Amino acid sequence: MNARTVRPRLRRLPLNIAAAVTVVVCLFPVYWMISTAFKPSKDIQSADPQLFPHTWTLDHFRRAVEADGFALFWRNSILVTLGAVLLALLVALGAAFAVARMRWKGRRQFMLMVFIAQMAPWESLIIPVYIISRDTDMLDRLPTLTLIYFMITLPFTIVVLRGFIGTIPPELEEAAQVDGCTRTGAFWRVAMPLLAPGLMATSLFGFITAWNEFAYANFLIIKQQDNRTLPVWLSSFQNTFGTDWGATMAASTLFALPALVIFLLLQRHVTSGFAAGAVKG
Image 1 (cartoon, one colour):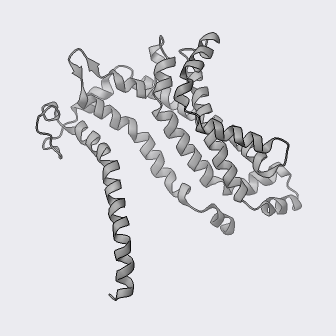
Image 2 (cartoon, rainbow, N blue to C red):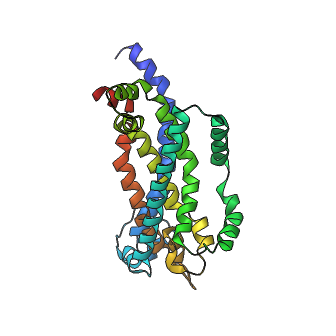
Image 3 (cartoon, one colour):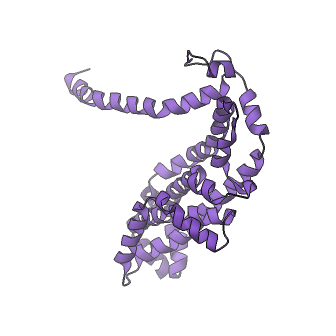
């Protein structure tokens, strides 16, 4: 090993160490949640915390699965999340195409409004949303949460898809139109396959955002407890004696699994180059 190869590695060493420390700091809470879910209650409440469980148990997972509303709240979260993501993709795809491919008056102002909506803290809109939902008799309903999550994820989805559409050469669609395709047909047959990474990335963002949202689900679903979602359900593992941390951590582990599975399934498509897909045909 000569000096030419050693020096670059030494320069990268601080960055590698910083990256490793960042990964450990970010993943340790997740590890602690999972390990706590498998620890017996006496070890969880011990004054001497154990980094690794010495005794493993599945009792906490059993209590979480057998808790009231487990299956019902899972169904609610899945319906609301998938509905919001699909609706956001459908609307954002048309808006992004219009902004990236067409020239019309007010296009820049439209994108400015989208950026402003993206920067707005959605928590500050809880009270206006509550008043509107109350006046329109939309409280305690799952479609209300679906529309709210759709509005939260829509600006980001438009921005990302606009960027992806803008990088696809329009000549590809023009060539398809020369061959007899309509403008819409050329977009669906040529541009849509190249948009797969953008669709995957925005779907992943929208799913995680809607799946984890707590404030609106807790604030707008007041009377109809059966319409609550999983993040609100996680707060139910409390009694007069305090919080059941074992069941809470087990339920949180189960709650995190869908997002983790979807990320693992989509990461290859998200990171793959869509330009390479055009070359591969």
